Image 1 (tube, rainbow, N blue to C red):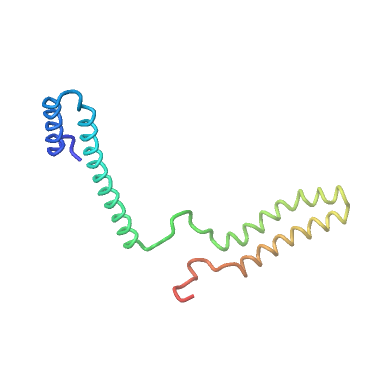
Image 2: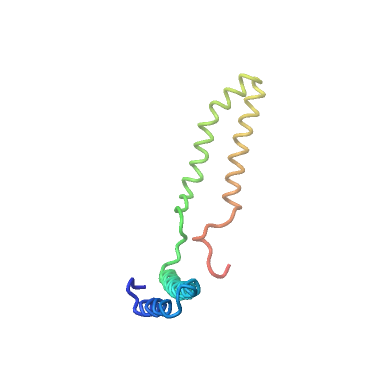
Length: 139
């Protein structure tokens, strides 16, 4: 919308002329009428801009290769070995705490928990959902 819209300029001139003709007692109604016309113009321009932006987004999505937005999926090798490496690093203080507090039984329980967590993680990666790359349109 131009700052110097000719239609709104005409409307403003007509409103000011009507105020001169009718007097100040109709000023409130004239201003309300003019503001309603301005609001309608602004709304129509906003609707046009929103429609245009929406059409551009739909067009760009249709042309894109439809890769999901967001961080890339982690490398499966890193996910498998990274988790195991982290649990082995954490196993050192857990083993020390378990052995110091409960002796051999505490050491056995801490290592059983570490093995259990790693087994659960590997089973989840085996039986979990397939990655988006492995899926096709037919499954």
